[in-house]
Length: 314
Ligand code: NDP
Ligand code: OXD
Image 1 (tube, rainbow, N blue to C red):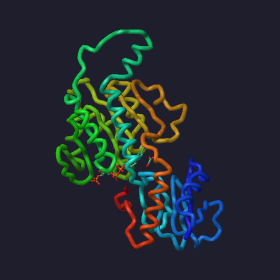
Image 2: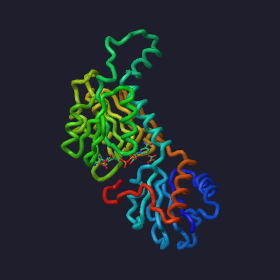
Image 3: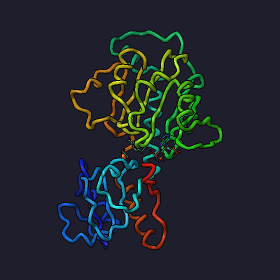
Image 4: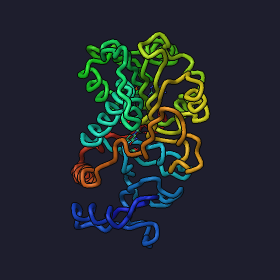
């Protein structure tokens, strides 16, 4: 049985080549080349056009080509089949690299020293806090959040985490639910969001949340880092907070609109680091292998891995 690849913004030809090298007995079709809808058993999606997987009578599962699935679940004509998301050690490692990098850029005041170097100014800080004196709060204690927590702890930061349901994790202070969020924010100097985009997390990183972050830390104000999804942030609020000093700095990899329009005022915001949604790209060969292994296992009677709970939205 064959596969239907429906992607937006990615090159279908190279994905086709990769997948077929691992599943040579199959055909990989696209919405443009699909004729017989009954021959499709699996869908592969990255921001697929809505309706691309409707009316496929033998469809068994849809694979998201990324870790997030908001781009799949947004389709009003999504068939009722399991949605499999990517969990891949390489992707996880990349996200932790990005989180550690952004945390360190703010912690070690990189923007300021970068500017000083360009201006040929030799001026030391009066005080550089230790990592143990800086409180990092991580929103999302899933695959990515937990790995980032471990790497931040290894550097020495005072880390705590927040999840939807209660999580007991040895060596980590954890909070959950709405009430837990306020408590986490009150003890956070650097907030890192690795949340999926759901009805509950949409717009969460807003003025109200920023106002609840700690202001008694070593930098006199908090920092915000978002590597989850742009829909979780209110960019106008983040911009206003950077302008007013309510936020001392921020790092965003994801945006309400992607690509970030050239006209966005975020490009000029003070102490904001912007990356183009590449904090943790899915390494194509690893993802193709993951899908091929999952299909072989599924066809031998094993369950599909990392199936999304559609009710929760992640
Ligand atoms: P997981 O599903 O493993 O973890 C999600 C975590 O978020 C869980 O701890 C979950 O809580 C928590 N969560 C979900 N909803 C809420 C809520 N309403 N309140 C509090 N906590 C909540 O996801 P991953 O860690 O693998 O990935 C996270 C997200 O990162 C992806 O969904 C994707 O959007 C984004 N991503 C971004 C990339 C990039 O390049 N920028 C690359 C890859 C992913 P609980 O433990 O209770 O279930
Ligand atoms: C993902 C992403 O979900 O790249 O994997 O954002």
